Length: 164
Image (cartoon, rainbow, N blue to C red; front, side, top):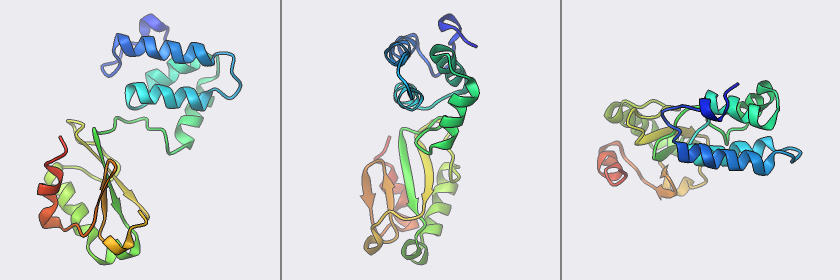
């Protein structure tokens, strides 16, 4: 198990370690602390690398299997880095019929990005979702908090160039 001096990871700065230590210390004696600690640590780092899972387990004195089990059970948590911008592509019936698959194919080709992955420069993450509840705007993409309706493959590049 890593100790504070051993929490060396390219995505975790010394300042982040200090914040993580504060989170763990604040929840040390709290029953059911795993979820809030994971959430707060993910907010600090952006995701939950395995070394951080081990560190949280050590800090809370909880078995690694329990911490990892919670982290992998809830879709809120990610063990892989996420992009600065998350693209959610709706795969609902209306979006599918109106061409969302072509949009996803264009995203894959333009950014070398498949569903569930993140670009190497961590600019974008792509998620396919079942429904975004905007069927009247089909096909729909949500980038971060921005909803884009009537999206076509041909307009995709100009739409995404605004997200650096």
